[in-house]
Image (tube, rainbow, N blue to C red; front, side, top):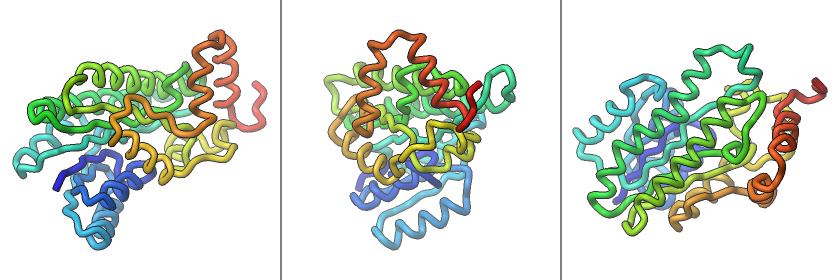
Length: 261
């Protein structure tokens, strides 16, 4: 049986992706900080789908975490066929009043750890001429985001990086997919202190819907997968809209509900 490694697997899109892979009889290596949630999820998946589930409790903000994950799996002789870089978080507010330690951790998790894990596992996939990588970006990747400047910039990196990797492995049986969901019902809003911003006041897709879509797109080898018609339309047309208009619209979306400043 094949094995998928999923980061940020204890909640949201990562949790739902774990269920999708399990349903398809793919063994799992689940990575997250929340040990209690991981244990609960693993027990559920083992019983429901009769697959092997390995847990690695790790904070991807820690400098050596990626190498520790890779080395642990090497020691256990677990071959990773699917790498799902899902872990990430955001923050709302002006950069001038933000806490640097949170911005630094965001860059570490959203960019550095994602890149490092890809660099560690990609050579093995390339050597076997088989494997799939899915990096969870966002519709935030398609434009700058006032009041969430660092988060939007990290997701732009994820999109650009994944597209480049996808081109580099062209001709092999290795693929790289950037999954770009829009606002999604998950723990993201709470961790980013974003519950009250306008962007999250409209009907949102569920983590399950996004996970199902992302899995299918990855299995088809799609380079960029944007979920939802509205999101696809916006991602397309933003290329042709003057930058100052885009900045105005995104800022309004990222302001708290009722805030006209």
